[in-house]
Image (cartoon, rainbow, N blue to C red; front, side, top):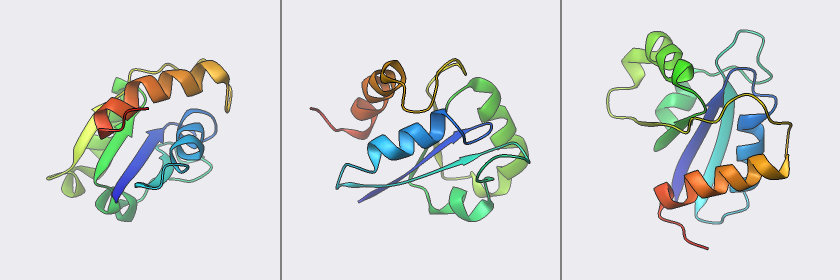
Length: 110
């Protein structure tokens, strides 16, 4: 079972959508968090260490993640999805984009 962590800024739209979608896959264990202090679920070092693979939505998230959690990122695979903050929670276009970008990287083909 792969442990997958999705990260955005607020953990309100993109990463919770990803968590909801990919938690439906039996071969995945999924979590999400935000990098901002006022995020719904703020990222912690335990979540970074837990994950087998980390997906961030934007390049700025990768930089922030690296700045705030460098000691825990040594052996972590971090992938930037380049998904801008212009989608609503569970918006069909966001779901389609997430599946298109994430599933091949996880070796899951539908």
